[in-house]
Length: 103
Image (cartoon, rainbow, N blue to C red; front, top):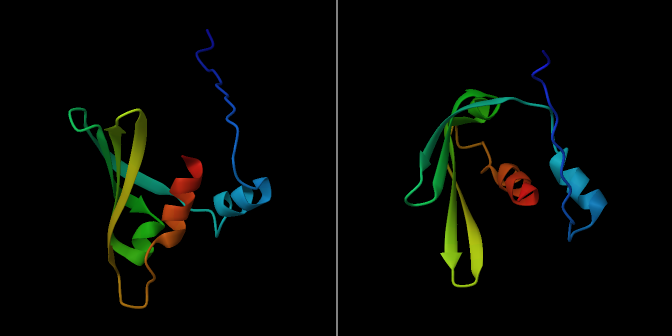
């Protein structure tokens, strides 16, 4: 019995397709292994890096998503908390750009 499957979906994008592709394919290919914590009451998902390329640059790396209901609209708040390996390491702006482009 085959238990495999495939899911696909489409969403209309409101930015330039070439620019979106550039953001999504930025830099070298890497991996990210994380620990995930979910707080249903506060609608928060917290990812903590356990392994991966980001830990080459940062001693600690955490991504926090929070869904905030504001009247008729909903907002996704994205927070990245990090500690650099050294002062020459830039802030993780490319990761923020990547996350924002995927939402």
